[in-house]
Image 1 (cartoon, rainbow, N blue to C red):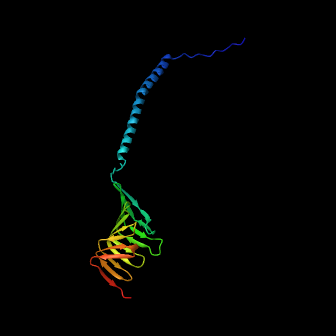
Image 2 (cartoon, rainbow, N blue to C red):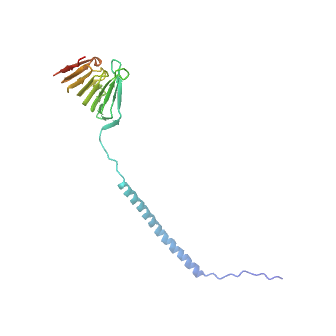
Image 3 (cartoon, rainbow, N blue to C red):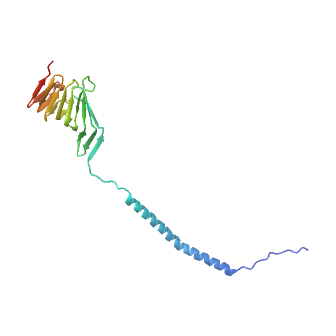
Length: 207
């Protein structure tokens, strides 16, 4: 017969096992109290960072300015005789309270660009009324009729529908025929006729 060996069973230290179990309970209990506190501190820290970032961020400036500004504005149309006209400006401003009126900076107007003798008008400032189609130029107004005649004035109002123009701030003209100056003037008949009024002075160049 063969003898069968049995495994040796070591005695269980119940006291040590109970002590380990108690330590686990203490650790679990502590974690249950500490972890929520840590999460609360993290949440509070994130909220503080968001608040600080919001306070440091630049705030948009609210404005009630009704002015709309445009760069390189262009307006075009046709005079009643069929010639085209183009009004351009370095900068334009439209007031929302009067949307039909446009203020122009360094405006220039070209009439009849498709013809052999286009007329050019320029000034420092201008106002174009889209309802009445009147263009008023002010400040160092310069007019070139395309035929060698040049006119200087400080104020002119052009009706872009008819092509007529009126100036009330004096005029000085120079061209192949001679020179002229007057207190006021009006341009009629597609620019072929100019009427001068008030202290009119002329000088005719000899042929």
